Amino acid sequence: MSVKKVIGKVHLYLSLMFGIFIVLLCVSGSILVFDHDIKKFQHPELYKVSAGNATYSEIESNIKEAYPKGKINRIYTPDGPFGLGTYLYWVKEGKTVHTLSIDPGTGEINGNEGDESPFIVWLKSFHSTLLIPVYGIYVVGWIGFILAFILLTGLYMWWPGIKKTIQGLKLRKNAPNSYARFSSWHKVIGVYTIPILLVITLSGALIPFYVGMLGWFGIDSTMSAEELTLQPTPEGELPLDVLLAKLKENEPNNNVLSQIRYPASPEKAIEFRTKRLQDPGFGSNRIYMNQYTGEIIGKQGIDTTPGWIGKVWLFPIHTAVDFSMFLKIVYALAGLVPVFLMFSGLYIWWFKRRKRRQTNTNEHLVHKPL
Image: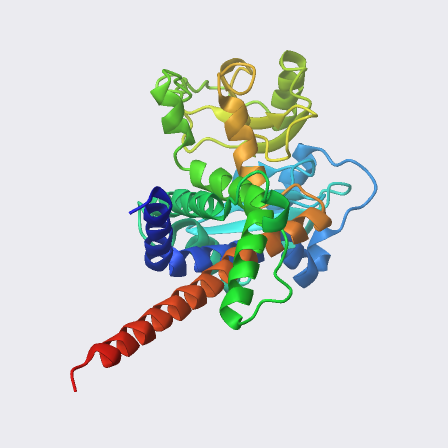
């Protein structure tokens, strides 16, 4: 059996085994590209932005008044991609976490963004884990690698040689039957969309494995619990506005603050996620600060950790979270291409299989003794 036939068999069997999971992940991903836009359409009142510039202290005071037993555990700033121009505060009250949209001009609470569609909440969980506990994110990652391999084997089987490349990129307009038409569409659409599909697929597949892969090259991108443990002082935590002033003073190159993550316990450091102007909006550069003294006790980022630039870009590239609406539409349409490739490929396989059976039946009848 030739190499091309072996690769064709691998392409076919992987598609048959994992095709339904690939289709479900691609369809859910195409919907989730518009996650924040859907939210804004459903609840436009949550994204009110007034003139002015409220301080963190003013915002905290308003939250304490509305949720006296609540504890702030995360803040997304208007400069990040998630709030769409507003602050998003995660406020934990008992076992409930409220996601509050805050007007950055007045500091007033626009509303609780936690009223997100249950379907979207479920879809996010399904897309990232297939609803498999603990190891689901890694299963989805491996399916992403399998899809990338299917795409590359498909490209190998399509390759007609240098002289016939242009011809191979054209649809067969005068195809004699449905098999030839589907085969032509399957190949041409697949080849044209492979670059963007590989970008989306591999960026998503690498997310759960990237930090571990850095370890293969001896790059330790994690910080131990001991490094981030500190001693609380009797005076208590410094106000957030004071901590941010110290952050700006000591980290002038991290121009934009994207997230603030409060520690889970008083002995742990507060975490600021920042970005440079040329970085995507997710803010994956991390600065850990002693909230009692304002001292920076640890950093993870492009300037301090080799290979970190990949981590900074993987999530934004995979989700298009900080992209224009035009690019989001391109991403969503590209995400639907594997659905077409799956069903057109099944039809091609079924047609060839039926043809083969008919041929075998005819040969049997011809050679059947009278």
